[in-house]
Image (cartoon, rainbow, N blue to C red):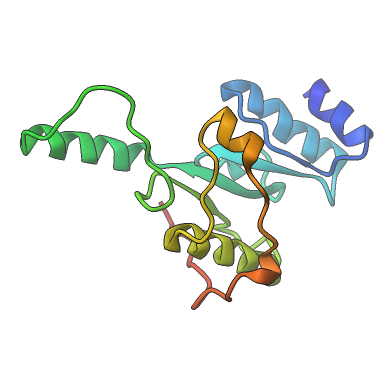
Length: 153
């Protein structure tokens, strides 16, 4: 909580406390600071920690990973080792279940999501790729066909 308060006091208005139970303090700090301060939930909807102060959440598709792994075992195609599940594989996503984020911002999120699905934008996955990565301006991307609906799970 104190670290997030220090970040807010230094000018931040959004925190993304990805640190297990220590993220609770991030939500408490947003609530303490009041309107205009936000926390992004990690892995699941965490709005219950400070109702009205969650600016969506980053969803990790653990259910997708488990289902895929079970399917691979059943089908005899399981290969041990790290598995990478990105947006294309429904392994990660950004969810705004309460409609807190402005529609025009979510439209840009949808543009990037679609560009990743189309292969127009390839997010870096290694340190070397990150060092060589050139960010893509959303204004150069075609508009997404339609905004992506937020899942309820």
